[in-house]
Length: 121
Image 1: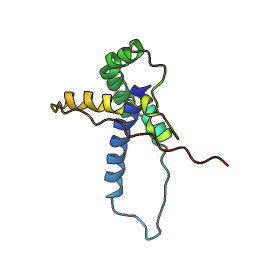
Image 2 (image 1 turned 90 degrees about the vertical axis):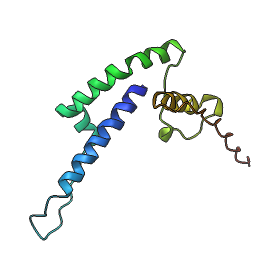
Image 3 (image 1 turned 120 degrees about the vertical axis):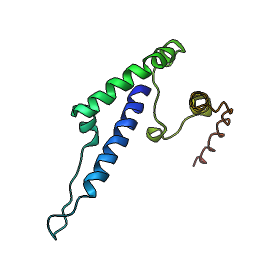
Image 4 (image 1 turned 180 degrees about the horizontal axis):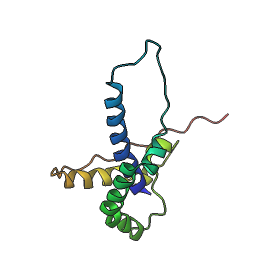
């Protein structure tokens, strides 16, 4: 599950860079033109997206196996979560691992306390 998020993140960066390059091209007409791009489809169907996804799968396969061995059934991105108890927040552990990999072994901060429950009526 976390592999897909990392893949989407890398593919998204690539696609934004490609979009910026295309946006720099001069406009052919005076009328503005607006287009919509399905980034997920590009990530899945384009040769570049497929190459990045394969690379990410290979890079993150050992971590995925570790997570599956540490008893996780599902890892969700914070953006899709409305509420979570601080006990389920693995962001500090992931941040520590990323910092260690990046050469900085600084300890990650503890997760923030969960928000107070709204008063019941």
